[in-house]
Amino acid sequence: MPATPQRGRALRRLTIGAAVLAAAGLTATALPAGADTGHAGHAGRTVDVQLLSFNDFHGNLEPPQGSSGTVEEAQPDGSKKSIPAGGAEYLAQSLRTARKGHPYSVTAAAGDLVGASPLLSGLFHDEPTIEAMNKLGLDVTSVGNHEFDEGRAELTRLQKGGCHPKDGCYEKGKKFRGADFPYLAANVTDEKTGKPLLKPYTVWKHKGVRIGFIGVTLEGTPDIVSANGVKGLKFHDEVETINKYAKVLNKQGVKSIVALIHEGGMPASTSYNYHCDSPGPGDGISGPITDIAKHVTPAVDALVTGHTHQAYACTIPDPSGRPRTVTSAASYGKLYTDTTLTYDRRTRDIVRTSVKAPGAVNHVVDRTQPKAADLTSLITRWNKLAAPVAARPVGHISADIAGRGAAAPESPLGDVIADAQLEATKAEGKGGAQLALMNPGGVRSDLAFKASGSEGDGVVTYGEAFTVQPFTNMMNVVDLTGAQLLTALQQQVSGPNEASPKILQISKGLTYTLDMTKSGAARIVKDSVKLDGTALDPAKTYRVAMNEFLAGGGDGFAAFKDGKNKYVGPSDLDAFTGYLTAHSSAGTPLTPPKADRITVVK
Image 1: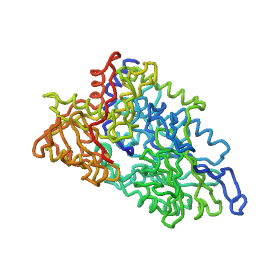
Image 2 (image 1 turned 45 degrees about the horizontal axis):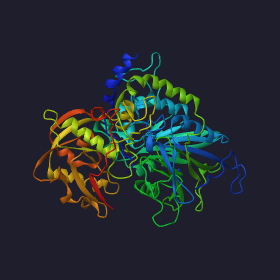
Image 3 (image 1 turned 120 degrees about the vertical axis):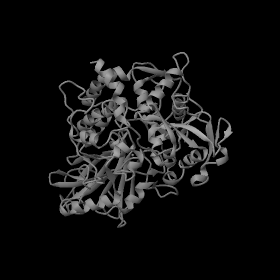
Image 4 (image 1 turned 90 degrees about the horizontal axis):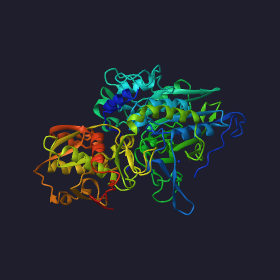
C-alpha cells in the first residue's frame, strides 16, 4: 500500500507524557560532480551542482524497527536482499560523506519531515527532528500533508521557533529556535487573504550559482488530514502553482529551478536500485506524479518528490519532450538521492539535452558506517527526557507482528489494532460497538520482537506502541446501516481510492472477499460480507467503531460521515495499549494473528 497520511489531533498526545515528564523533572551512475568542470567545449563555463535529497522522514531519529527499517536491493541473480537502513545519526554521516569534494552542494527535502513520528520526536511536538534537520545541514524543504497534523499555528512555530503554547519549553533555560531552513508551501494559502501560508519559493546561492526551489504539497491534503489541521487554508493545483512561481523566478533571472513536491508515484519494483527507465513491459513508474511531471513547465529542471514512501530515480519527459529527473528516496531516512545538476554560468540554466538528463542515483543510509556524534548526542539528550514515558512496558509478543511492512492488504498488526478498538468500545455504556474498522495509513510501523532498548526481547514498550499509533485519535462509535457499511467497504477500492486502494483493517468476526480481478466497487463481493457468520443486512443498523479521522470521512470514506448517534470513546493509543496489557504477559505473549479475515482474489 502507498503510504498515506494523517489522521489526528496530536495535541492530545502529550497529556500523559507532559505529566510524567514533569514528575521526572534509490542502476544509474551519477555524472561526475566537481567544481568548474568543462562541458560541451566550454571549459570553465559549467559547474556541477550536487543536489542531495530525501523525503518522508517522519521523525525517525532512531533507526526504525522491523521491516520499516529496511530497504530492498535487487541482486544480479534476480533475488532481493533486505538491508537495515536509516536513523538520523547515519543519515547525517551519509550526507556529510557525500558532500566531500563537492564545493557546490545543496540539500533539500520533499515534505513530511515530521508528523506520525515515533515517541522520541512526537512526544515533544517534533522539536527534536527540527533540531536534527538543522544539524545535518538541510537547506530547504517543501511542506507535506503531515506538517499540518497539528495545524497552521504549530507549523509556523516549527518554522519560526518558540516554546509550545500549552506544554512550554522542555528543557530549562532552552527556547526552541525553530528551523534554520525554509519550509516552502507555494500551493497553500489563507482562505481569507489569499496569501501563501509560508514562503512559496527560495533561491539557493553559492559563488555566483543560483538555483530556485519551489515547494508544494499534494492538492488533496485536506482529504487526508484532520479538519482542524487545515482549517482556514486552501490547497491549490500542484502544476498550476509550480508553473506560476517558475515564471516569477525566471523574471528574477533565476533560470535553474527544482520543484519539491510532496506527491509521488509507484515504481514497477520495490527495490531501491531498480532501473526505473528500463524499456521492458510493465516497467517504469505510475501514479499521480507521472501526470504532474508531464505538465510542469520545462523551466523546472528536476522534481524531488515524496508521499508514497517509494524509492525511484526516473526520467519523465517534460512538456517539450526532454527527459527530466523525478526522484524519491523512500522514507524514514533510509535512502538519500544524489542528483547532478550541470549549471551553465552563461545561461544560468541547468544543461539538459534530449539524450541525457541530469544523473540521479539513490544511496542506502547504511548502518555499518560511523554515527554522526552530534546526532548521537541529540538523541541521547531527548531520550533522557522521554525515558519515563517511553520505557514503560505495555505488553508482550511472541514474534514480529507485521503492520506497515505487511505485503498483503490485511496485516496482522492491523487485525490486532481493530480488535483492540472493538474491545475498548463494545460494552454497553462504552459505545456498544459490534465491529471496528482501522485506516491502513494510521498503522505507522511493525511491532518488533527484538528489543529496541534494555527492556528485553518480546516486550512492547509504550514508546513502541506510540510509534505504531502516534496520532492519538479519539475513538468514535456510530450507527451505520448495512447498506452504508457496504458502501464504505466499496469506497476502499473505488472513487479516489480505485487507483491506490486503502483497505481497512477489520475486527474479528467481520469477513468478506476482495476480488482484485474486477474494477471499482465490484471488487467487494457483496454476498460475501458477513458479521459473525451472518450476511450483512442492508436495512439493519450496526454500531461501528473507528477513529475520528475515519468518522470524519478521511481517506475518501465519505460514507462514514453519515454515521448517527456518535459516542466518543478513549484514544486509539489507549485502546491499543490497554488491549496489549490485557491479552499478554511474559509467560503468555500475544502471537501474530493469521490475518485471514479478508479473502483476496488476485
